[in-house]
Amino acid sequence: MSKIFLPMEEFIKYSSEKADEIMEMKLGEEYFTRYSFSDIDGNQCYTDEGQDIFNEILDNVEEFLADVGIYPESEEDKKNVIPR
Image (cartoon, rainbow, N blue to C red; front, side, top):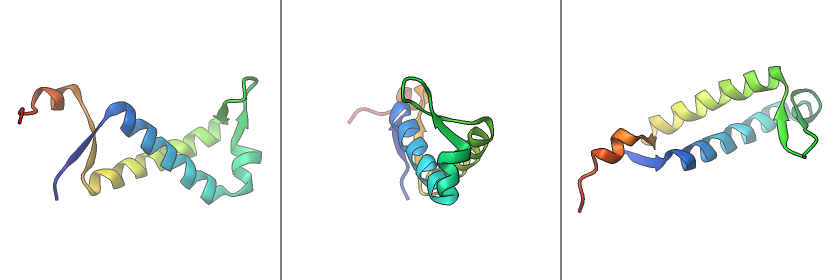
């Protein structure tokens, strides 16, 4: 299986969205009532406990992506690309 390197910004966005979706799916209504809230500007935020849960799920999402050959592109990766 070949490796795919996503730009860091794209990798973070994708993995974070998936982790949030999984968290919401797992926690159901508690996601909204116990683990997250909207701040004064309407931004979605996590409680301290919610952030811990999110971080754990995010670690698992990133491990899964690596298992299927999807990685964040680092500056070192960019230097090692051979032009076609």
